[in-house]
Length: 408
Image 1: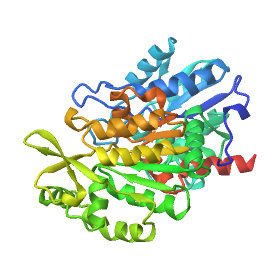
Image 2: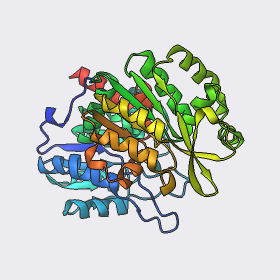
Image 3: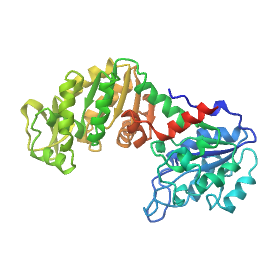
Image 4: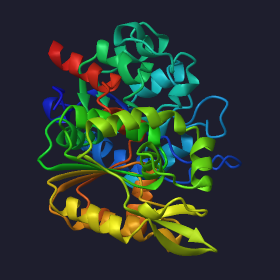
């Protein structure tokens, strides 16, 4: 695991803690109301509550949307929702680092919580830079003298070298919040030190990510098996030389995925025994499910799921695994006719004794739809940061915490 400090390494009583969280939520574009408070609840019930209980003066930094986008809005409602979740008053400053914000921070008492306004209201927030460069920005120069410690809890934004993510780490003692700590520990367990055999089940439609993840985990001996399904499976079949049919091929072309075929072909040639592609597919024939063996392709119909033979093969591999990463469903699980492959594969993961990590919006939605959330070892809501971590990329937010820890 990266060498970072956590909440356990600092005495927060009476200290002012600047806490960068990820409150970015689904917003109704017309009313600007928050539609899903999952992330607010996650940070509130763990890091924020713990800091408050420990007697810190808690100052929240967060973003919502991007300037110009329909979901770019104030964090006033986020603060209200946080207060409801914690059953305590949560203050809101309609300001980020001006006099109003500074005064609100200075007047905080031990255990009190203050939410500052959207950090992306600061024009330089999204500029990339080093912690040292960002430490010279107005945001950091105005707020850091008012704080004793920086708590980095926005793992979902850790792949961005933005001012509020890395800037404070250059000038303040910096520790990981509980969400950041949990994400890093869980991911470290399946990327840097997985118990073997390790299996990556890659489905959904993000085939470019699947290629990069497969290449990294196979090249570095992290995974013994990569199982493919969904659009990823169709693309890997195509790279293997299988004609998946005009409709499916046109879909891959429309999504500009055919450009990845040469890279996948090269990978499959190098690791022929490690990459699994579907043995059969379920297609939509006149609105009904019909299964076709890969050896009987092409098909005139749209492929929407993996078939029974593939499920049998994949579940056999999964039941022997000690570590499993799943990113993306095996098919169009939203349609009851085609939920079978995802239900069986995810069910096998849930019932296995392996440490299982689930990531990606559609994977999480499918897990919840199937009622398997509590049976998975860890569910990551991180999105882009998760994918980059799985691809072996260094995340600026984590690197900044490592540098801060090295200075102590």
